[in-house]
Length: 592
Image 1 (cartoon, rainbow, N blue to C red):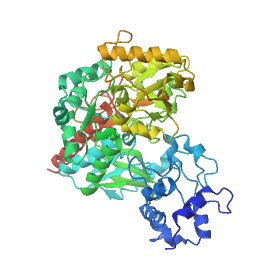
Image 2 (image 1 turned 45 degrees about the vertical axis):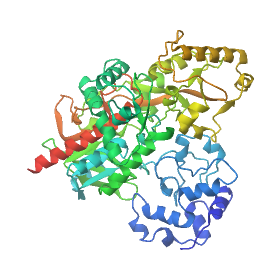
Image 3 (image 1 turned 180 degrees about the vertical axis):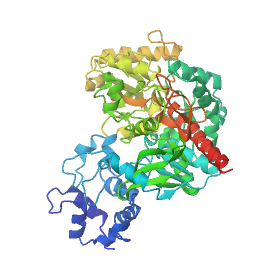
Image 4 (image 1 turned 135 degrees about the vertical axis):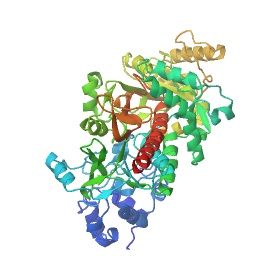
């Protein structure tokens, strides 16, 4: 294969008026032939495009090599990857406009980087062609082209947890379909942690907690409309989920308190790293080792039920393979919520029309539609949560930073709420401000504990404050800032906050300080498919749909009217594992 150097990549990434109209034409003009990217032939291209990804890497190096080359003399690289491994074809397309997935979190990238062949179009996900009902019917009537023991829809934490557990429970023919070109979903974006009580990590750190305490916090946080049976399952199985992840090779050796929690129970990797990438990486490694097949760029359009009512399989639309009917006696729905779909959000919460979202672009509510079509029960769909401290309107600034001691100041330099309150309460406080945004403030000690926020600096999101006079940088009166900070530090020393009732103040704040402007954004949809504690999907008459299971944000009832931080990841692991166990049990018993 003829090689393009990394320098060549940088050169062609900066041009804007080259004769080529797309990446394939540019390669051809550079001496690269079709067979160099399509070694097995154009007709054999896979939906996941792994062959093309490997061709890209063979010429340009992997993401680490790309980032290293680009970071010379600057502090930011568009190819720096702090999440899961993302294939080149997740963004770059040979014969069509690229997809700028990075703007999902980093909108400033559209201004800082000129992506070749973008033609000014900013997309954050791959779009599939529209399919008519007649085509679906024809595909089903043609019969299945493959048969598996289990089909999982969605390659996030819930889907992967179900796959790994089902494999450990005796199944050996499992396939995951993921519509995005990369895995992880919302789970890979998780910044805070995994909530669990009575864990080995808490015991080693000397943190006191209890399952009943965790249960009470979750019910209170959800305004007591949660399904008690589901909350009982979540809290009682949470510690076993942590032990399971650690046994699989995950690092969940640190813990911190989150808003609405009365104990340090948000488990995460050491050093303040994000827990999402760690979680997805460990699940992916084990899933691959167990032989689970993962098909990206594959959108499930329909779940098929037999005349008997049992699950028969799904209809899938592949990016290149088109429509296929895939048979299986069990399906696990793990598609996530619908926070990215503002039109759907506004149907249930008109007040959130136009509100930005922190979600991954795959969270569009597909699973809700799939489940409704087969008669599944819906629970709490109007319960939608905003995350109070999103930077640039979309990027989550982890709530554990407030647990580590950060505070909130309004644009006049005053505190205005209990920063450790539940997310819905803190969001309400911010929205009552004239600016509808607030400054999140922390210091070096907090920065070192929650190291993930260091990544905000090269994005240009942080303002460093060396002394009170520096507050003028953000148009805050130094005298007001001084009064607010000195008062808070006094409250922290005394262990009581008479102004707002904050009960957990980890430390006082010292210069230098760091400020980031934040505002609430749509974060989690608490409502969804009705399930049992065994992760079985219920129909509108509360009867079990045979062979149908669901887990994670696509379900409803676990979190009630408001989710506590860290409970979403616990939800994906606890109910994902249960879905895997239940499906395996169903298949094994069915075989007998």
